[in-house]
Image 1 (tube, rainbow, N blue to C red):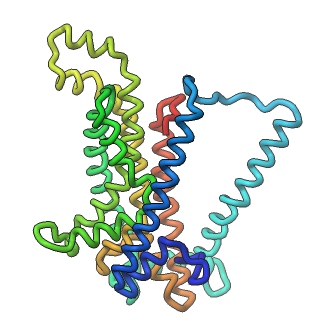
Image 2: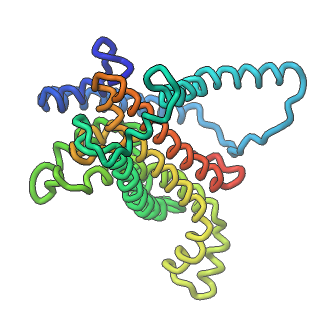
Image 3: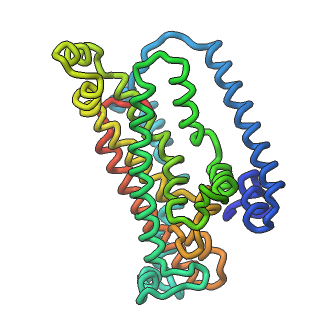
Length: 335
């Protein structure tokens, strides 16, 4: 929507335009089905290819080693150089633009974000209110995703039932399905009683939770699978019921993985745009929605505020990622 423009439209952007701007839901639904079909073909093809080439092996995390020799130094320098240009330079330019206004470097763009709760016509609320909405939605979505992901992980871990793989696959679908399709589907399904949630505050956290739940499942399931069966057997021998075994053996050992999954869900919710663009109310925009609206307005002030809000979103997401890295178990590379 921002980088491509009309001449480089994708299926996601066209689904959004037909559904939100033109209100042609039939065309948007046809494009959504086309995208789902393409994703399904790719997933089935990749699965079949993987099964044919699958070999029995034990996955392990690569351990860090010292840089030795000119070849290692050249490879390291090249990697850092590419990362600096591709990742570091755009972020540095974003920060630089956020502190530049009127041809001089100043914090005016940040001051405008909190000038007495000033409401911008493009946002319906103050920029600080958009930040508050993002944090509220992210916290609620993280709670829903954490509880739901834990229950799914407990249901599928350590069991060889036919329905376990199907259950896990169903909840992992948002990883391979566009968030735009998820938001469009919720807009169509949850529009009539008894599930008319179009005006509900909960619609955005539910959408974010569905997107974040796969991260919780993929973080907790390996931790539960790594629990030694002997621990469960010992607890059962001492008279513990299955529910107590889960509560006092499995959950403490999977707690760190659960925290990592919750961190992923929180970070994903903060930056989510595709599904939010369909289900968010105009008076409750999130930070990504506010940035998109500000970039659509003319004038240097709106552009500067968009840059400042982008830096704030970057800081919040970076804090969540750093927390995830601190909580991630050493040597874990399951996600």
